[in-house]
Amino acid sequence: MGAIPFPLSSSPGAKLQEGGGRLINAYAEKLGESARFPVVWKRTPGLRQRVDITGHSHLRGAILVASTLLVAMDTRVYSITESAGVYTTTNLGALSGTDRLTVAKNNAGTPNIVAVTTAGCFNLFTGSAPTSFADADLPQPNSVCMIDGYFIFSIGDGRIFASGLNAVTISTSSYTTEQGLVLRRVVTFRDEVYAFGDKWCGVYRDAGTSPFPLERRFTIPRGICGTHAIAGWEPGWENELIWVGEDLRVHRLDGYTPKPISTPDVERAIQSCADASLLEASVYMSDGNPIWQLTSPGEWTWEYNQRTGNWNERESYNRDDSRMSVAVRTFDEWWSGDRTTGKLFKIDSSYYREANDPLIWTVESGIVSNFPARVGAPRADFDFTAAVGLAAGEDPIQTDPKVLVSWSNDGGYTYGSPVQRGLGGEGEPEVSVTVHRTGLIKAKGKRFRLQVSDPVHVGFLGGQLAAIQRAA
Image (cartoon, rainbow, N blue to C red; front, side, top):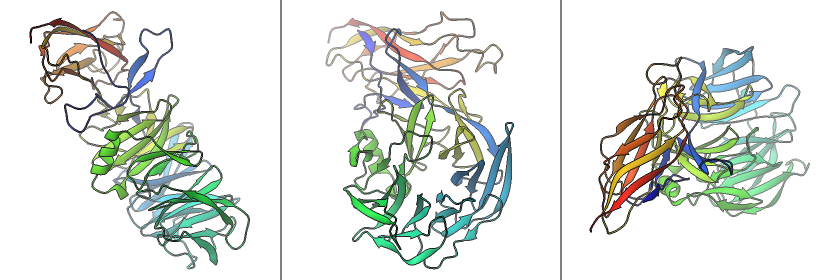
């Protein structure tokens, strides 16, 4: 029958028999023209522990200030510094609230740092405890960003306030209003301020005017669903702004035009989440791949590869979503926080776990079908990079790694018990993965599911199915 179809982008479908295949903790990468196959399916990067701030349950936000990383863990703020690969953590003091925050710094000689939470607005410091934002002329904001030394604050009623230049003072008249808009977020992108609301986005530039320094340029006809459903301006990333609009689709800014990039499967996930206003987006780089990640906490995580335009799902062990939270570029690495502990991780493609938990690579094929005829399928072969075991690794999961192969004879509605096949220990480059007697391909078609939990390199190059025509 030939090649088994495997997806480049995860497509679970609205119903089990409708999908085009799934990629969970897996992504497709194009290979060179002379490679044996055009695509290899790899494992998403693991999480290698760098710091453990014990006694905490989640990371709220982070910012790198010179060579000091500030992190908000639950109700405390910590500084982290690095010297010769050793990380020093200091408890700086209490910070009200427990929710996700936005944070920015200005261009002062000693930068002012401001954080906004639902519990208030606060000044942060690299060497002392947070303080409340002292200027009473600022109403309760819902986000903060910085442009050219000015802090810019969004207020839910549509007002946008600006601080003094490289200061934390606010003039009572230093604001403008987006009339008829419920403001949800301000971000700085390409030297402009984007004020996102429930219906549209106003774009501003620094005009040097007084008392309010920004000048409105035009409107982008697309709002945002929630304060934290946007990412892409962060230093070290791809410089592409991506967000979830008020229409519950994912958009990428193309010039000044919002271009939808979400698939129907991603949009179904967004529309089904308990509260779209709580969606969280973040970005990171891995092996040159710019990844934009979207999580509905406790429900699901999807990742968009800006290089390929493909989507994959990500799931942590015993979770429906990814434990990753608030990625940040720091100490020449990409770090991520955790949703359930005070641990901070390096996002690392050469580490095949999440902390000590398995990171289960899962690829499900599309449907092999000859509807309505019945076809025998006596053998299936799967081409994996062999000899990925490590002689000095953990026995047996690294010395003799396995792949689990299971298949469905009803189009993906149910799967049988998996069988194990070896991926090859160190020095075993001829190992191949083959399964026999997979049963008839019936009217609804056959699917294959491949899973690797062992912490070794995974390189999957495709599969072939031998088939024999049977009478209908």
